[in-house]
Length: 326
Image (cartoon, rainbow, N blue to C red; front, side, top):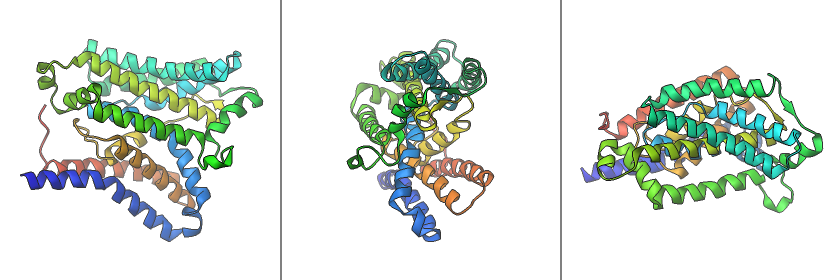
């Protein structure tokens, strides 16, 4: 029994890195000159920022036994709010705060509806997916919200592939992602909130008996997920230099795939920040490789779907094919 548990944990820890190695070997063989170039790797790192930020929040929600399907729409709404704040004359920091606060507000609503009305997270976040997208289109008058070029240029530096100054090596947004990932790693593994998160996903009834404030913890986790989705929306604005209400469609699927590839169980109770971050990088690297070798976009969408099914199948195998106790 102990040997089986040990093997399962080793597989869970090494799985994301093995998948990443497989992608690197595949596309490194097909197009070594471009795929493994420093320029392409810097580009992939910058493109990982949006997915990576969303995985930080989603990891907490999934480990707690929940799901959030609204993160793509939330990110789009945050990008529109950021652009509107800049166009209204607010400074860069205030506009960024407005975008992040918008995401946190959506996440807070998700958490309150899930806990107060006892509606399953899938249904709640599916509803807010449509609501947030609709609000984004309403605020933007169904068009991208543009700002003055000199104002947008300041945000654009956050996602600049060749950073300024050059000694940064990677875009400032990448360093922000890594810093926040390190912080969330500590929170998940070494704080009371992290322990409560794992307890909720492992067995909610037992967690309640042990004194875990279930409703409050779930609400905080959804608000945290929304906060990171809002920050991802700010980074989307920085990359596109417009607040686009139609952007980030399907982002939730890529994020869920990254989290599950990273070793999280959709049944709850398991997951890691490092694994999710590796999963996010793998997904972006896969997209980059497909683009370089000329794989059509619809094939990439099929691959994402297949990866989700395969990752969930592997999760079932890790648990012996049985269902996790409720």
